[in-house]
Length: 376
Image: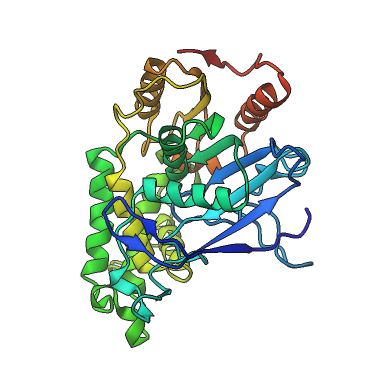
């Protein structure tokens, strides 16, 4: 893998948000992989999910491996082949990984944004991504790809900028959150709001971090990303020690695992960013919005059989809505033990179907395998 370097662009024009507020003098951090061809027809935009970033694959320095979140999918001769395609992934605004967010200075006031950072929507994210494309003088995107929260951005790209791309891949996503999904997000936010060190989002000024509540929030969320099959396979009812302790410590290995995930998350993620993104998820609602018939588009929809966060019925709703818009739709359900997190794991059929879809539309190679159905 070639070395990867972080890039950034500054925007002096304010970003008008769906809420009616504006963000002034903002920055977007992004990474690119591969080479842009002469007619700029090989661009793939990858939209990242909740706790991911612009760092999709590769490493920053020689001899120091810092694998990106989709390292098994993107790279030279991999499924999304950087020898063929020019990949862009943008760190979304409001994040804590470089783009303007709550941890940054509000140039209008001279103080940290903190709790004053405005509420965002996925439409706001897509608008900022579009402005970056304009700045990079990219007029067309060959394919927009995203999983989970990234898949929601893909749907918005088709709605807001229908002429910018003809090909879309949506993985383990939804048109809108269910009441149960909203309830999970609400519980995690309330946990943070009740944290003694949160200070209504202005904890930066006191040199404090509400780590405990962020850890618990991640434990709750992570529990929804994995399947009961995977949980049983890894842990079942295994104890950490030979016997139970008869106290309220973590007796079971699954408890220790969830705590480890939460503690790790709380060490690198920002609490205000977490609040912003979970609220952004709740507000997302594309149901019945894809109405007007545009030019024929190609959609690949991928679902995982053990994903109970966004199960098959969520993906069928996306398909039904796209059918009404007369789109070319390809759908596949992948069998996996890993639940919602399956989109991050290696799976031969999963990798191959994405590869074939990209080749079909880039080099006119037709899909022939892996139980793919046209116009379901």
